[in-house]
Image 1 (cartoon, rainbow, N blue to C red):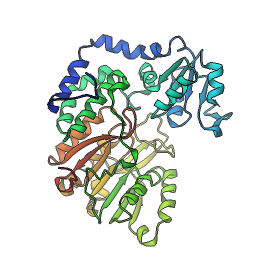
Image 2: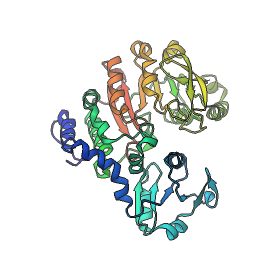
Image 3: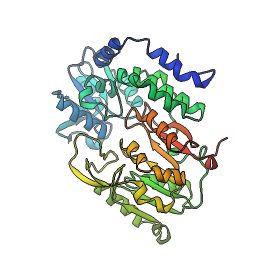
Image 4: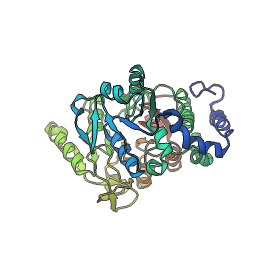
Length: 400
């Protein structure tokens, strides 16, 4: 079954997908995950080049070093990085790197939305080009589950939970996306995925949600204000209040700089809170990165932060729209907002790609709290990244 060509009764799509995947014996599935990288990289899997010196590349380098693997170099399309060291590894220009290593090393693409780079390397004559997901499978102890990926057999151990999440979804686009992602996550077959949506529509899809002039927007994981800026552009600066919640001090400084740039009237309706969002009001371990990847759930925590439940800090504001992009803490944050959700039923836009199981856990959790929510999945990037679950109360639905 081609994941991009589902037909017939959509309620059967998940069972058709699972039937296809479960034909593979478990032992064979485990072996496939362990050997996919070697097969794609052969005969060059002993030498590794990382294409992409950004956050994903640095994460990959860190994990490989912990596994005792020493990549030869970074490669990057940014000329400003050529000749520099990133985390102690030299950065090479693509032409130079392919000329020297193109026939003797595996080029692992450590870039989200990496298809264009894979095509670039192929056109340059590079022999071994491997998506980072295959490398993460091979060194699962270093990368999984915090990478958003999971091993195939562990995914298929969660069939009953998958069914609950699938059954909560409200339209065929979401059901198809759900099944396609299951197929990709278990097989890494890119042909199973439909093209992603335009990322400019992320979080605030006017085809799903009717906007309000007096929207009270709570931005969990506000970063430097990027989502709030998108919110204001899409709403043409018409809003009630913005509550921007960001625990990382570096990110929060950039966020406050943006808030200070607003007009006096707009600035008076924006508040910045220095918390992590969770299911408990307490200090928790935290990894500061000063990037969008700041997280409470990594294994490299270097400090503690104060966390708060949304039930504690914003319920008296009667939020109408809540966005959550908090690097894997989304289920805890939802649990910490149960009273708020039951009382106010705000629109929810929740990222479901930081942990593989969140794709089914989060729709099921939101449905259990507010049964009349209409739930949708939309993906705004290649592979499984930038996938958002929208929970929309019937009165805010823009679609029938």
